[in-house]
Length: 232
Image (cartoon, rainbow, N blue to C red; front, side, top):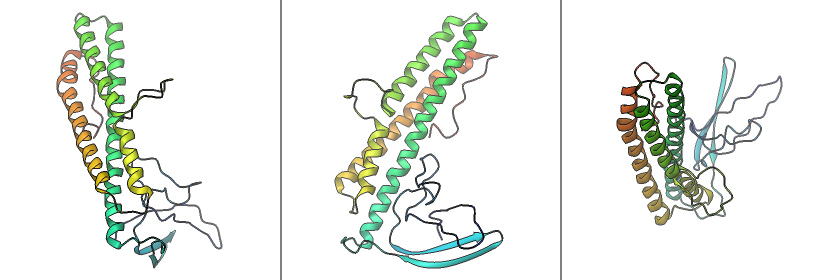
């Protein structure tokens, strides 16, 4: 009963072909896979089992069940497939949540910089206090951004990976091989989930302190608005 993937394409009179790449569709917030719009956007591998393919054209639909089998050369039990899928799903969802944090920090930074320019042009009486707050906000957001992702490209290849890159590495390790997730990978995943939670708390703290104080002083100017869901 769970929708695993959808493929949409323009049909032509006669025989049409749609190819499912045996993966789940990626959730919003992750780049879609697939080639040329076919395949429905590749994500996590589907677990062997019984599936239903439903074709809809206009008001007509037709459905047929089929079996998806594992690689016969791989000694992988049903429980192993399920464990791998569940762990990879956690890592995928974590990647989406970390990406939302990055987007929130970037959006807030842009808003703070725009407010800074507005108050400078207006030459408000409390300009020095406002600029002090905007400077603090930019500094705090930059520090958080540095924990979430690598700095913009530089000549220094020794820049260590941040949270988003580490999550992608774990996701690749969990979904790349046909193997039950190791205890080491599961432990690393749990640590990254905890770190993401800490980064979300940092953003919430910035919103509840510096950004709140800045909004209180902006008076007639537009307020800094937190992106929907970005602080969760």
